[in-house]
Length: 197
Image 1: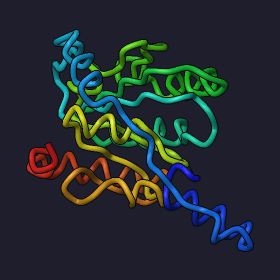
Image 2: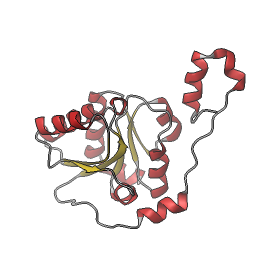
Image 3: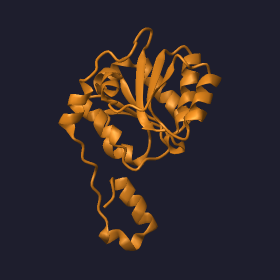
């Protein structure tokens, strides 16, 4: 039993002889608990001079594509776009991320929150959940964002196409340029964000 249809399809590609023995089932989420936790804190962000506020909760690993997202945000800032990105989590890529943030002087624009036992208030109050991954199996954070009513902005990976519709979020090309162009489009058309919300 795989965690998503795309994960099952990938598995079956590698082991076609097991096709008839495979199925998939998405993760279950305690919706009421997530909603209650999302209301434990309010006004978690400083929104001064910000047109788009992004939130990510993840393990800091290479497949998450975080350094390329930092570079895309640096390019947006250089072109006058006002956005902030708050990131909850930790992991092996932390030092690389801190280096990229410092290299592009983004310490005031990309804020590392560390590990959060309750990330849901940050998720609920963000403009969008931001996923910059190269690939994923079935990120539970997508469903959690839907539960608290937050639109999703993600790179184009198979599982995201299963879980995010044009009503619930924006899917960009799976590249640094794709992230840049997608976020730019969202900020150029703020009415799109209202529609997603």
